[in-house]
Image: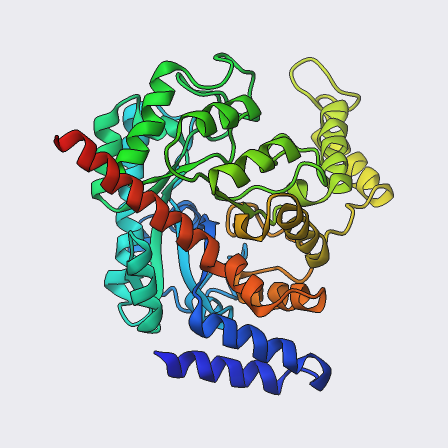
Length: 412
């Protein structure tokens, strides 16, 4: 309940130098009235991958000692003052379509299991009103995002079933181009959306589900923005002007998002935050391939121990650039200045990018530190509230209105 938030605030203030206590207190005040909502966290898939069937029964309260490390658990969600989370129900786009559907339903069930197992902490949520109600009760709203259009297996009926099971958004593609939409990280086949892809966008509008444009090509972004009747989201993307990764959002598209009323929720993955890190990552992968690319290529081909030693030597001479919380704040500021403060949010990608995260943003306990950094840069409490959750709640409410309008128009 509210007592839990007050207790967390007291602990933070006690451990914070006096000069920073004003920011900690301001953040706590903002998050008492506005739920902090993250657009994308892969914890369900991380639990499935690492724990298998034990994911249904293992203690999820404190996973801080786990190896490899999780970014998420209940203790740290509380410390981070999280009010709502879109849990990604990602499955591999390499799976056959029917298998993707089956695994997606299992992932949705796992999200629902959080609320069943920990009702004092989590509450299922589909609408903005559900989120506000959970926040008022001192619980974390559990929202669901289906992270890949391949997961509907080319069927609007499957999409409708996901909506009935509580899914709140569909990411139109993941890493691969699919039968009806081009991905940002695969060769294009359709020049954006096909006619069926446009039908998917309109069906999402009719269902009140959000159209998520993270992972899609720029042409797919533009096509979806031209078709949709509701605001879109980018559940976990950053600004392409600061980092040229094609997963990020160009300035031209940011202006279209502003006109659409949508929101770009900033990703923490280093390759989407730092241009230097993105280039280092490409160089690192190229060096691995240069050393050992069986069955035909590589300076150390057939000598895996030598290849590993030579790669370790390369890493020693080419350390990864350090990526910081401040750089994530730079992306937030760029989007807010170009598109407007009403069009930016948070979409960390926790438990989806491994243990390599920006310094200061290593897990779900660190949201208050990012909000405090923006306050240090001059952001008002009202603007921080929009970033934290106000903007995505507005988009959800707008999508619900479009759903109601479309229902009325088809009932006549």
